[in-house]
Image 1 (tube, helix red, strand yellow):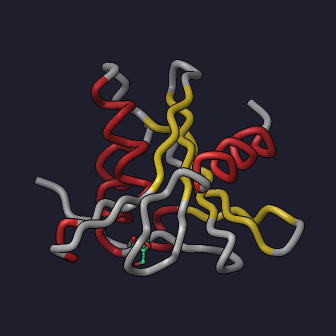
Image 2 (image 1 turned 90 degrees about the vertical axis):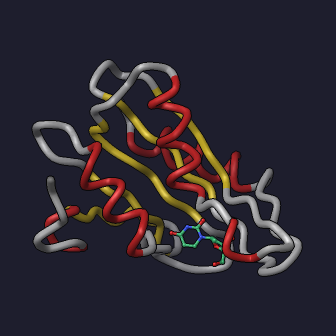
Length: 127
Ligand code: THU
């Protein structure tokens, strides 16, 4: 799977973000072990703490479709270069990473940058 394609999907879905409060759109596209892709955008609420991040929205769609191992995720915001996932999303990515890990793909100007969950979340929590 071409990671540029995943990023294109993340860019596309970021346009659907529901962001009346922060005005900060985010899109995410995950690639699962079975080479399926799922997209998600952030959506906010007047009760701010109910906001759902783009990453967890995309992961939720994968889970709902029976996919539990994620090989890669592209994350994009038009408002920020290298839009890193928040701490909560890092822990969720840790839970659903594939046995070969997970490539986290961000966009810096016109180039993709690649990151490992182990570096973004050392000692992720397990039960
Ligand atoms: N946001 C995401 O969608 N993903 C992240 O990893 C960081 C934050 C969203 C939540 C909120 O709608 C907006 O960005 C500003 O925090």
